[in-house]
Image (cartoon, rainbow, N blue to C red; front, top):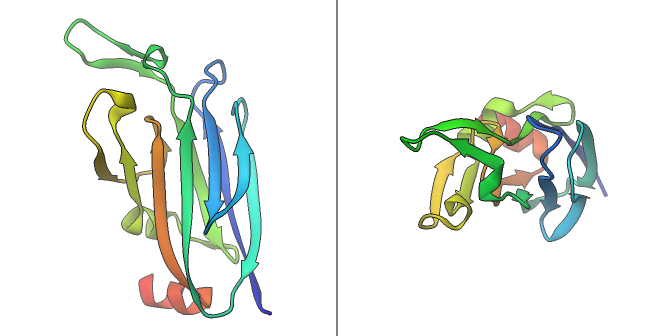
Length: 144
């Protein structure tokens, strides 16, 4: 069996707000932090034999009180989690995951279910998903 390594950094813009993060690789939870108070580096070794995969980042525990808006409804401050330094086999893939990732959420229950592009931060309870295939080097060559 061939293996490869996925890694990323999870951070927060406000350590006082108890936002949580899960990372799922296919149907396996490989990271579960109920309250992200500081940066975490996450690494996961996976089977690199031929196949289809899905990587998911799940933001949880966000409440409306974690966002401050003015009288016009404009956001003044907001607690979000950041996902940086995404890589496969130490090859930076932040651009690639931004290009291919979809962020699905419902504005923390205040709007309809929506899908948006992902730009490195999550401010609503929801899921960012990236589908890819292995062997990872072939997928990287086809998509970079």
